[in-house]
Length: 112
View (cartoon, rainbow, N blue to C red):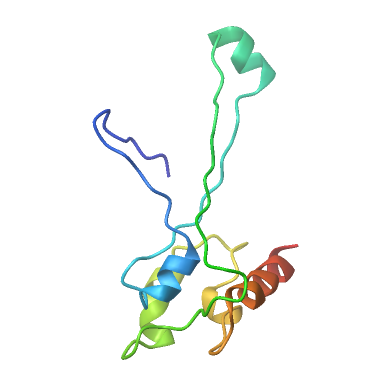
C-alpha cells in the first residue's frame, strides 16, 4: 500500500515493540522500502534517499504487555488476515517474560 503523506505532516512507522508495549493499542504494519532502478533514476533524474532512525528498548529491557492486556488484544486475529504470507505473526515469536534481545533473536530467526 502506498501512503500519501500531506506536505505539512510527519509520518512514523510503528514497529512491533510499540505494539507489545501498548498491548495492541498501536499496531505495527509490515513494510518494505523499494529503491528506484537505475533506469528510473536515469529517466526521471531522481532517486529515493532514506534516513532510518530506530528507537528501541535496551537489549535486556522487558517486553511485557501492559497490565490488563492480553496477547489476543495485542495481535488480533482479524488484523493477522491482512499480513502478507511471508510475515510470521507476533504470537509465534513473542512469549511472556521475554526481554527485547530475546524477542529480537526470535524475530531474526523467524525471518532469516
